[in-house]
Amino acid sequence: MDNELKQMAEQAVLNGKECPYIHQGENKAYYFKVINHPCHPEIARGEYESQKALQKHLPDNVSIPAAYGTFKDGKTSFFLTPFRDLSFDVPTPPEFAEVVAKLHTTSVSPTGKFGFHITTYLGRVPVINDWCDTWEEWFTRDFREGLAFERRVNGADPHFDELAAEFLKKGVPRLLRPLEAGRRSVKPVLLHGDLWEGNIKVDWDTGKPVLFDGVCVYGHNEHHLTAYKNLVPPSEPEEEYEDRLTLYMM
Picture (tube, rainbow, N blue to C red):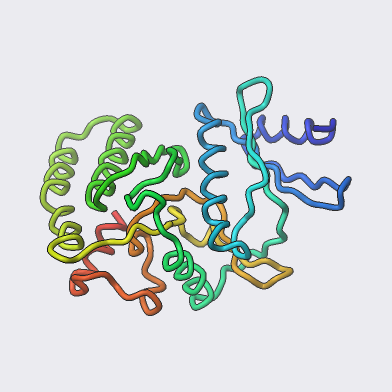
């Protein structure tokens, strides 16, 4: 790391921001992201492994992971990716749907289960990804972890906790258990994990959609997504599809 990169990295750490860096020595450009957070090593690895998994299925439509690591001071970590000149525009709905549908229809869980091989981070919130046999099991655990994080940050609310417990006891099983009842099954496919307009842009050079900031998990294809249901049919029971989408938005 030369002096210029050191200076930019130090400034990024001070400001708590991402650090773009273009290295001209090999006629290549890289985006250098500095992570300043108590769990910085895990966050850096989570992003690297997520983008690596996405790359296998969408090599032309993701930010390619080049490297990750921790600085010598042990206080910050970094994630490195080849620079792509991205517009501020988002892809059209058909373009977006086609890319995500390709991801969900070509990927397969390496274990046949729901989860991921490491913990990832949705912002500052850890996503526990230990493998689960059913989608209901993974989703319930993830929902509980989200509630626990909220409680640690904002304190307990007895009324809210009571509602949440009732929801987990009745609402989640009612909507998710039928997906895997009888002869039905849910195929665990690779999910980006944080799909929104801020994490998908258009490459100026190729005109193709590009996904980044992955928080991957092998899960139910309907999770976090409604735009592509015309390309990927809803799971059975189809009549409860809209109810499941409401559940996933909570």
